[in-house]
Length: 209
Image (cartoon, rainbow, N blue to C red):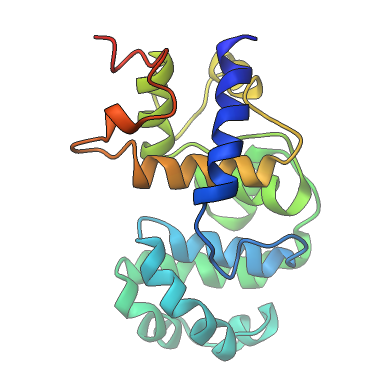
């Protein structure tokens, strides 16, 4: 078994026991809710969004209610999350363009909704089932440590990097993405990672240095 396949199977087993539960981690959510949730999660602790999630969607249950709200009002509502000015503009753009949300390539998706690589790829994966893995600093760190594989620019994933990422994609892609997020947050943390408790320590490049 090659390391990518072993990584996928090992991490999937870990997630079944240790994965975190959040209200957005379910199948079949509409595009509006998937995309807006990813925007709320952007550069924000998941625990913060877990507390905020239901409140936001009670105020803005669909794209029509969000599009009808002023930019100032949206900014006020999401102010506790931080980055509210930029986030509010993106949410407004999403609400006004959500009906254009057919399956499209990453580049077109980013342009239509004014989002970056991670949000675009996460939405394409979670809502449409497109076989891509979104990459943020946590994903980059985990893959860099385990495989010694350096993703140079998370804002723009290269063809060779995408080929590597594609080897990690199992049947249940959504759970795999959540597993990577959780493992990098719980065990393979930025500071003081729990290396000796790591499920990959038999081949992790970082631990063997």
